[in-house]
Amino acid sequence: MVPSSIKSLGTLWRLRRFRWIAVLSALAYWLAFLFAIQDLTVHARVGPVALTLADRAWELMFQPRGPFHFEPIALLQLPFLTWTFAPLNAATGAVLAALVGLNISLAWLAVSRPRACRARPAAGILAALPGLLAGSACCGPVLFIVLGLPISASVIGLFGMLVPAAVVLLVLALLFNLRRVDAQSALA
Image (cartoon, rainbow, N blue to C red; front, top):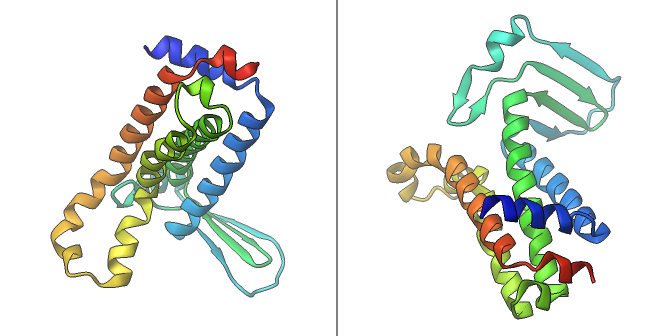
Protein backbone atom coordinates (compact mmCIF):
# COMPACT_ATOMS: atom_id res chain seq x y z
CA MET A 1 0.00 0.00 0.00
CA VAL A 2 2.72 2.50 0.96
CA PRO A 3 5.00 1.92 -2.08
CA SER A 4 2.09 2.39 -4.50
CA SER A 5 1.03 5.53 -2.60
CA ILE A 6 4.55 6.93 -2.89
CA LYS A 7 4.54 6.12 -6.60
CA SER A 8 1.15 7.88 -7.01
CA LEU A 9 2.47 10.89 -5.11
CA GLY A 10 5.53 11.01 -7.37
CA THR A 11 3.29 10.92 -10.42
CA LEU A 12 1.01 13.64 -9.04
CA TRP A 13 4.03 15.79 -8.16
CA ARG A 14 4.58 16.25 -11.90
CA LEU A 15 1.41 18.38 -12.00
CA ARG A 16 2.57 21.97 -11.66
CA ARG A 17 -0.60 23.16 -9.91
CA PHE A 18 -0.46 20.21 -7.48
CA ARG A 19 3.12 21.21 -6.55
CA TRP A 20 2.25 24.90 -6.15
CA ILE A 21 -0.78 24.21 -3.99
CA ALA A 22 1.21 21.79 -1.82
CA VAL A 23 4.16 24.14 -1.37
CA LEU A 24 2.17 27.34 -0.81
CA SER A 25 -0.30 25.76 1.61
CA ALA A 26 2.58 24.08 3.48
CA LEU A 27 4.43 27.39 3.74
CA ALA A 28 1.30 29.18 4.95
CA TYR A 29 0.65 26.45 7.52
CA TRP A 30 4.28 26.46 8.69
CA LEU A 31 4.21 30.22 9.26
CA ALA A 32 0.85 29.95 11.04
CA PHE A 33 2.29 27.17 13.21
CA LEU A 34 5.28 29.34 14.17
CA PHE A 35 2.96 32.25 14.97
CA ALA A 36 0.64 29.99 17.00
CA ILE A 37 3.46 28.68 19.20
CA GLN A 38 4.84 32.25 19.38
CA ASP A 39 8.23 31.48 17.86
CA LEU A 40 7.44 34.10 15.21
CA THR A 41 6.02 37.45 16.34
CA VAL A 42 5.11 40.70 14.64
CA HIS A 43 5.92 44.00 16.30
CA ALA A 44 6.08 47.70 15.45
CA ARG A 45 9.82 48.12 16.00
CA VAL A 46 11.84 49.20 13.00
CA GLY A 47 15.48 48.60 13.72
CA PRO A 48 18.55 46.96 12.33
CA VAL A 49 18.66 43.28 11.52
CA ALA A 50 20.22 41.39 14.41
CA LEU A 51 21.05 37.75 15.05
CA THR A 52 21.81 36.54 18.56
CA LEU A 53 22.93 32.97 19.22
CA ALA A 54 22.50 31.29 22.58
CA ASP A 55 25.40 29.97 24.63
CA ARG A 56 25.35 26.17 24.84
CA ALA A 57 22.94 26.05 21.88
CA TRP A 58 23.38 22.31 21.42
CA GLU A 59 22.23 21.60 25.00
CA LEU A 60 19.48 24.19 24.89
CA MET A 61 18.05 22.88 21.62
CA PHE A 62 16.80 19.67 23.27
CA GLN A 63 15.31 21.29 26.38
CA PRO A 64 11.52 21.06 26.29
CA ARG A 65 9.30 24.01 27.19
CA GLY A 66 6.25 21.77 27.00
CA PRO A 67 5.10 18.75 25.05
CA PHE A 68 6.68 18.97 21.57
CA HIS A 69 7.72 22.57 22.22
CA PHE A 70 11.43 23.27 22.67
CA GLU A 71 13.73 26.10 23.72
CA PRO A 72 15.02 28.48 21.05
CA ILE A 73 18.73 28.69 20.28
CA ALA A 74 18.76 31.92 18.28
CA LEU A 75 16.95 35.23 18.03
CA LEU A 76 16.57 36.84 14.63
CA GLN A 77 15.27 40.40 14.71
CA LEU A 78 14.00 41.92 11.49
CA PRO A 79 11.97 45.07 10.93
CA PHE A 80 8.44 44.24 12.14
CA LEU A 81 9.31 40.58 12.80
CA THR A 82 11.11 38.55 15.47
CA TRP A 83 11.88 34.85 15.17
CA THR A 84 13.03 32.92 18.21
CA PHE A 85 14.51 30.01 16.29
CA ALA A 86 14.04 26.62 17.87
CA PRO A 87 15.17 23.96 15.36
CA LEU A 88 12.96 21.22 16.76
CA ASN A 89 9.88 23.49 16.73
CA ALA A 90 10.65 24.47 13.14
CA ALA A 91 11.12 20.81 12.17
CA THR A 92 7.88 19.74 13.88
CA GLY A 93 6.04 22.51 12.08
CA ALA A 94 7.66 21.55 8.77
CA VAL A 95 6.55 17.92 9.08
CA LEU A 96 2.99 18.96 9.91
CA ALA A 97 3.06 21.59 7.15
CA ALA A 98 4.25 19.11 4.51
CA LEU A 99 1.49 16.67 5.44
CA VAL A 100 -1.15 19.42 5.47
CA GLY A 101 0.09 20.74 2.11
CA LEU A 102 -0.11 17.32 0.49
CA ASN A 103 -3.58 16.70 1.91
CA ILE A 104 -4.79 20.07 0.64
CA SER A 105 -3.33 19.33 -2.79
CA LEU A 106 -5.19 16.02 -2.86
CA ALA A 107 -8.39 17.85 -1.89
CA TRP A 108 -7.80 20.24 -4.79
CA LEU A 109 -7.31 17.25 -7.09
CA ALA A 110 -10.56 15.67 -5.91
CA VAL A 111 -12.45 18.90 -6.56
CA SER A 112 -10.85 19.76 -9.89
CA ARG A 113 -10.54 16.22 -11.29
CA PRO A 114 -13.07 14.03 -9.49
CA ARG A 115 -12.67 11.15 -11.94
CA ALA A 116 -9.01 10.82 -10.98
CA CYS A 117 -10.06 10.36 -7.35
CA ARG A 118 -13.10 8.21 -8.09
CA ALA A 119 -15.16 10.63 -6.03
CA ARG A 120 -17.73 13.38 -6.26
CA PRO A 121 -16.31 16.92 -6.05
CA ALA A 122 -17.79 17.42 -2.56
CA ALA A 123 -15.79 14.42 -1.34
CA GLY A 124 -12.58 16.36 -1.95
CA ILE A 125 -13.57 19.04 0.51
CA LEU A 126 -14.56 16.39 3.05
CA ALA A 127 -11.24 14.62 2.50
CA ALA A 128 -9.39 17.79 3.50
CA LEU A 129 -11.21 18.15 6.82
CA PRO A 130 -9.26 15.49 8.77
CA GLY A 131 -6.02 17.02 7.57
CA LEU A 132 -7.00 20.54 8.52
CA LEU A 133 -8.44 19.53 11.89
CA ALA A 134 -5.42 17.39 12.72
CA GLY A 135 -3.11 20.14 11.55
CA SER A 136 -4.61 22.57 14.05
CA ALA A 137 -3.14 20.61 16.97
CA CYS A 138 -0.82 23.47 17.86
CA CYS A 139 -3.71 25.88 18.39
CA GLY A 140 -6.10 23.73 20.42
CA PRO A 141 -4.46 24.33 23.81
CA VAL A 142 -4.17 28.06 23.14
CA LEU A 143 -7.84 28.26 22.15
CA PHE A 144 -8.94 26.57 25.39
CA ILE A 145 -6.77 28.89 27.47
CA VAL A 146 -7.88 32.06 25.65
CA LEU A 147 -11.54 31.15 25.95
CA GLY A 148 -11.06 30.17 29.58
CA LEU A 149 -13.15 27.08 29.13
CA PRO A 150 -13.64 25.06 32.31
CA ILE A 151 -12.88 21.91 30.35
CA SER A 152 -9.29 23.06 29.80
CA ALA A 153 -8.25 21.95 33.28
CA SER A 154 -9.56 18.44 32.74
CA VAL A 155 -8.01 17.92 29.30
CA ILE A 156 -4.71 19.76 29.79
CA GLY A 157 -2.92 16.42 30.16
CA LEU A 158 -4.08 15.34 26.71
CA PHE A 159 -2.50 18.30 24.93
CA GLY A 160 0.85 16.53 24.74
CA MET A 161 -0.76 13.91 22.51
CA LEU A 162 -2.13 16.38 19.95
CA VAL A 163 0.98 16.71 17.80
CA PRO A 164 1.64 12.93 17.49
CA ALA A 165 -2.08 12.37 16.91
CA ALA A 166 -2.04 15.06 14.21
CA VAL A 167 0.89 13.41 12.44
CA VAL A 168 -0.78 9.99 12.56
CA LEU A 169 -4.12 11.36 11.30
CA LEU A 170 -2.47 13.35 8.53
CA VAL A 171 -0.43 10.36 7.35
CA LEU A 172 -3.49 8.08 7.45
CA ALA A 173 -5.58 10.63 5.52
CA LEU A 174 -2.80 11.05 2.97
CA LEU A 175 -2.38 7.29 2.46
CA PHE A 176 -6.14 6.74 2.26
CA ASN A 177 -6.58 9.50 -0.32
CA LEU A 178 -3.54 8.43 -2.35
CA ARG A 179 -4.91 4.91 -2.50
CA ARG A 180 -8.08 6.25 -4.12
CA VAL A 181 -6.24 8.34 -6.74
CA ASP A 182 -5.65 7.17 -10.28
CA ALA A 183 -2.50 9.25 -10.82
CA GLN A 184 -2.24 8.52 -14.54
CA SER A 185 -5.74 9.84 -15.25
CA ALA A 186 -4.95 12.93 -13.16
CA LEU A 187 -2.13 13.76 -15.56
CA ALA A 188 -4.41 13.53 -18.58
